[in-house]
Length: 351
Image (tube, rainbow, N blue to C red; front, side):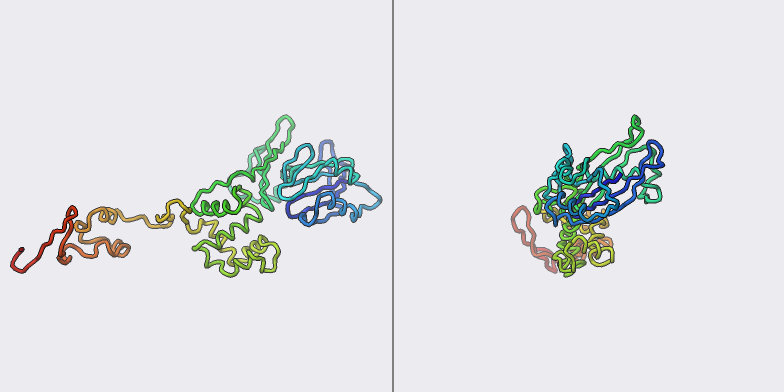
């Protein structure tokens, strides 16, 4: 049986034809799939999926006059009644209309991460890399996440009745982004001005990479790391039509883009959120806590402060004990309750 499979994303549409080999497979086993023909198309350069699929089938060489018996397309967007309004494309895909136009008896539309989650169940241990923690629990829940043009998410839950995993589709990439640090709060405010609402997908995606880079290039603490290179990358003057690809390449090569992105990962400078706490210094994690003796001395009026202070306090606060009481020159006056009192110091006594 010949099948057509498609991965439809906001940037690329990947189509492939496979020969499903069921001979020799035991009952209940998955058939083996042998690729026959595949091709990738830029999604934004076409008006619809119908046109891409027609062009693909026109050049596909199946051999022996074989025809496609069924097709399945994974699309970035919610699926309802075998229809999908793509999230990052101006497309509306109708599985029934596509079946008639392509002459394929069965055309099924699924969420792209529904398809990716199904693929996770057949991935072997040799294709996995542990990120931390202990060994995975047998039949435990599985989360599938992937950042591309958008942020896709899906979940797998074990079904004891079916003796297999069930996939739960999700549009979790569109939940609001929760800022935790002052730097992240500044990023959220930066993106709010641009988009109005900031979801996780606004940061964890290709365009999000560009926006994070633009935000960091304007931060005073990071401005010197990017310089003209940052402006060239954002302006597309680096020989790339896609700034996200240029930023990724420079980051992997260890250029200034990498330093900016690492600064974001480490927290960077902790800026004050606009309009909140203006004029107050935000203490960073690495700052040394103030000395208790210094704090106690600063709470006293100047004339009652101790004669000496720790060396590091004098260096940090040179005006703290500028004139110890023993060496302080006589004052010509002081103020008490708003009235001036004049005193004069003479050699023979006080007048």
